[in-house]
Image 1 (tube, helix red, strand yellow):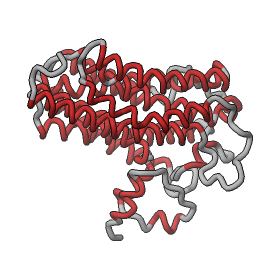
Image 2 (tube, helix red, strand yellow; image 1 turned 120 degrees about the horizontal axis):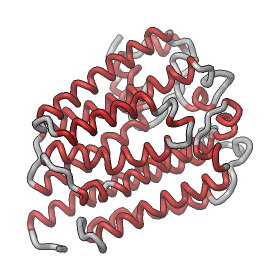
Image 3 (tube, one colour; image 1 turned 60 degrees about the vertical axis):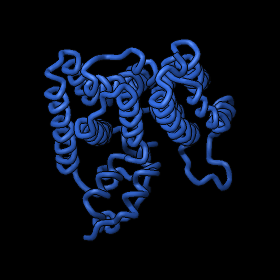
Image 4 (cartoon, one colour; image 1 turned 90 degrees about the vertical axis):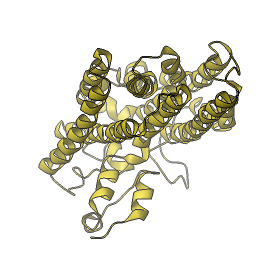
Length: 341
């Protein structure tokens, strides 16, 4: 069994479909983990950590080792959450009967690639490694009570997101809070040894763009969830209202980016780079303004993903530009310390 770097790249950039157990068994351990944890999407965690790192660099408080440990740990924790999500939904009989989750990516349990015991082992190992990085962050922060609180909060969200949070229409809000102000603000706090509301608020635009993926996915599978008794936000308020909520999430991402420039002045006008993603945002808004079709249009290659796909593509473009904008903002302020005060 050789290392398959090509599969590593594929698994971190897209959701992999695979129907052959023989093909699955031939994969290396890292490839299996990346595919099983849906790393094509969990890379949003790396984006949040990179954004926090640039804010720390700008403030002169960046330390590479603590940042790297937290980044790897949070990525592993996100993967552990997805493993638990699949384990829980499969055990509760949700991920069966060609359910939405089993159609868009590998589901090792549902496809018989491994059993529940193996899935739980992968979850435990991933979760423990993520927890060790959190313990290191707590130690590095001098056992700061706020960092300890963030550690406890993150652990609870990892365990409770799939059930009950997702089933009571608060999963979408949880996604926004964690991948925006909490993760970006929290990583920064560990590095800086102090909380910054400026950093937390500056993380809101990216958190909203991440939440838009989750809302889009939940709209895509709202009919299946309604039949299965999974009460996500789109199930609770209906597909039409949920589509408008998602449109607002995308629009507000740009509104908060503008606010961080022209209201709080925390970031400079170089962040206007994110508006290069506006065509992708407009494409998402136009798609969201109409109901999801009942079946795939002719030639559509990635059904049943519809709203989630366009939201993901926008998030990736927006996130890339946001990181570049934050990096350039840092560079400009290092050269001209009084710029845009």
